[in-house]
Image (cartoon, rainbow, N blue to C red; front, side, top):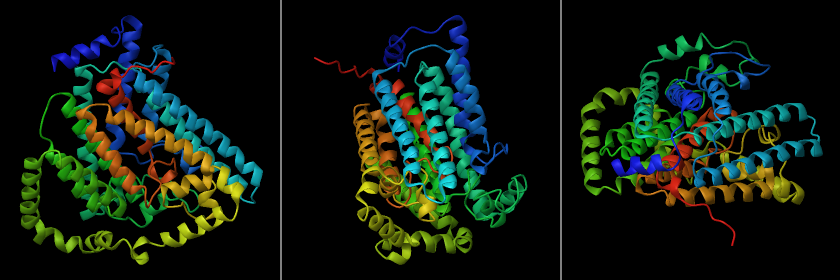
Length: 441
């Protein structure tokens, strides 16, 4: 622990005076951003569209961005700088993809522009989070504080999913505070009208609830290991249970991959965890079974994913998008424009590769592929403590087979900004932060 702390302090001199106060405010703002990930329902109806309704993470992020802008310090590590320029490149590509909409000039151009502009808005948040987090000094004290905040956020997120699975009262109560009106609330109408179970307090999309559970759980485990603490199997068990209850089949499959990859590293812990899970399941089965029949039936379809009937119409969407791309080489090359998928197809692609291809073309897919190749390479070089983030990223890639996990769409709330924060922490606090820049010969 002392060696790690000494290496971290050696990366750059500690801030002093005004810089120290701005550093503290930036760290506090990002800590609040992390804590509020357990409640991402809108709290402020701002702007002309429900897509811009502000949540607690949004509001804390703008405060943090202001502090970070005044805290004039360069990014701390080579890995952070490499990923920063990769993110800037993706943002620039997205701006160009928004311009492609004007080339096609579809009758629904105005609506496409609104969805495309929202994607850029979310990417601005990603850049802001990563930029602010890359300027922090990750001392053991800061990591310990964020570990406590992440643990609370993870526990409340899972608790909200459990509560809303077995009782709809919380959804009724929270739904009263959402702005009302058909055509005003967009997909938020589903939250307060249909009162679906297992959504927790994070949004209207079951897949997003599962992503939050996985990412917050992985961050808790990473910070534990950075602080020299062992254990944490309860995090994996709770994440798996919450992923099951939130009714996301992609989320459950991704979480299962994440849990298996983690437990394979510790065979004895894996055996004890499996034993504990079996005992807990047997004890509680008589109580939970009557309330989980529909959930269990839905999640059981994962075992027969090859059946088109278990993919909720996704095969038809995939065939339609693939056929349209093959029939128009220009569209295949540069895409249909940012924000076009949900308008032209009546829905998103429900597949990460097809979503990127349809909206940004082969050009966009190559750029995104290059970014993730860089990210995975840096995570592999980040040391054993960062393996948990690599494993959860593998789980996310599994979910991307049937949803747009890494695409800035409206259904997944602040998942991408939170993921940017986690990556910035890993690249700034672990072995990845000490990877030297490659200089030209």
